[in-house]
Amino acid sequence: MAQKTLCLGPKCAFGPNSSSLFRCGKKALKPTIRGNKIVFWCTWLNDECIGAKCQYAYCEARAMTPEGYCTYKAPGEEEAGKRDILAEVKKMEKEVIKLIEAVAAVKTAYEVHR
Image (cartoon, rainbow, N blue to C red; front, side, top):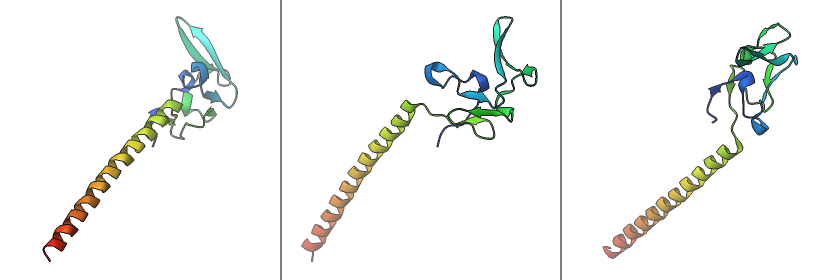
C-alpha cells in the first residue's frame, strides 16, 4: 500500500520535470509573487489557494484521496518493492528446501529403525 502524505497542493513537484500534478477544476489557479515568495492565487474566490481542501482540486495522476492525501509513487519506487518480493521468494524457497531435506532425513531414520 502506498504511503499516505498530505497533498502539497500547487506546490506538488511529482510531475514531469518537477512540474505540479495538482490542478484546479475551475482553471482559476494563478501563481503570483508576494514579497519574496510565490503564492498560488485562486482567481475564482480572489483569495489564496487552499489546496486539497478545495472541492475543485484534483491530481493529474489521480493520486489524491478525498481526505487530501497524496498516494503517488514515483516509477523507481515501485521497482524497489518488486525486488523485495523476489528476494523474499528466494528466501522462502531456501527454507522449503531445508524442510524437505529434514523430512527426508526423518523418513530415512524411521526406515532404518524399523
